[in-house]
Length: 159
Image (cartoon, rainbow, N blue to C red; front, side, top):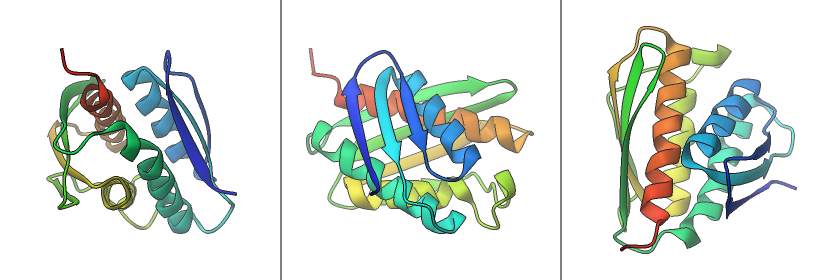
């Protein structure tokens, strides 16, 4: 059975998607966002596993984000620097300047595919700006770490 659970915590992640790169990126997302993440996906082809992971995380994230909440983060990973802004919205979409087609050995843009499913399922508008990044692995890490921090900030109670 596929599914995900998110809890306040210290960034502990137990992730099994069937796509090792995505497992690593989601672990980085949880660590950077300082929330605990358990996510398991039924084995399938890699593109279906990426879709299922985005859907599962979206279902877990949605209840934590009241309508209209916004979170943002700018995060580095080696030479890469990414900014991600999320908003709980009635118009789920992803706007990105990052083209990482083929990164991680997939024939598609893993990040775009995952983010699209996450946005649709959680009702998020997600803006991704890759500010710097020559190495596609570092660029992906920066994007997912920034996403984790942005989601964490969006779910934090207002003070």
